Image 1 (cartoon, rainbow, N blue to C red):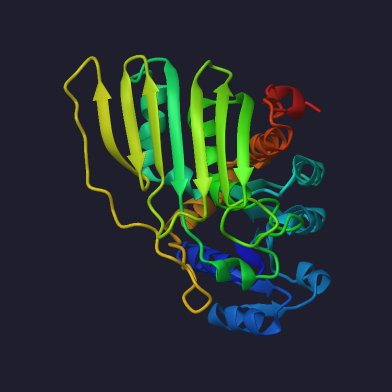
Image 2 (cartoon, rainbow, N blue to C red):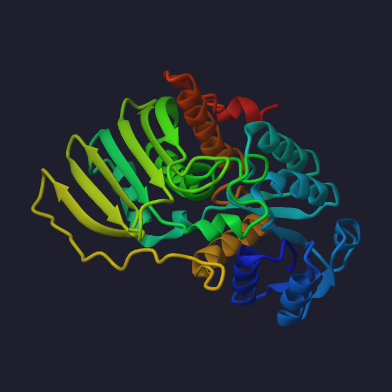
Length: 351
């Protein structure tokens, strides 16, 4: 499998490391606007460097692309690749609006290529255990959940970037960029959200979008959840997700299942929290662990070989964007908002 990387920033470096660690995968080409970074990343992986998109898309051999450009360009780059018959694996979020997500989903369907999105937390063992507890009914009927994302990004995380914190290319802040992983997990574990009531604020950073968000979510199964996300919680703490059902409660902290308490047994599982998320800076950027991205890539390759949907396809990834759009709309209106998220996905897939 020959992969082309679209983007040359930190996350594309993670994509490259994931590819290099995966048997049968080779990075064949790298595209980006920053010639120095493109050349460096391409040289590290024995790939061809491009600073123009069209010549890159014509590169051979190339079977798929991994997209790590600014969020608001994901659909643009993904659609261009799909039209060339290339499979598309895009960094989260799928794009910053449902309209753009729809355009990419439709292009992939029209040109009969696979479309997947990097939501690597779905492969974390602790979160898979939590989902199994819910799916198997061991927690009973889900009734309450809470998700906290108390992260920290210093001001130069935004000021040192041409796109982070902008409405056009980041689409949002604490939620669309950082908290989208957690929104995806809530949907994956608990199902569709019916409506939301939210507040957002820009409390500490000088950016166009929010660095604090709090929302109340009502799920179609009747469960209620609270969601908090921020990039202003110095010095940064682990994410935590609690799910309570009629038969018990389970807690995941820092992607590890740290507690399970069930009415029907004496199960008690607990573990100490690992260290907090460390501040990033221009001189010390965040370097992501590539193991989760590798799991996504391996699943995507199997999806191509088996002609099935990947673990998180375009329609699945669209749902978190739809919920975040509704949260932003609710915050602007000061009222509850219904979520338009293709509740009946089979109808959309039949189009």
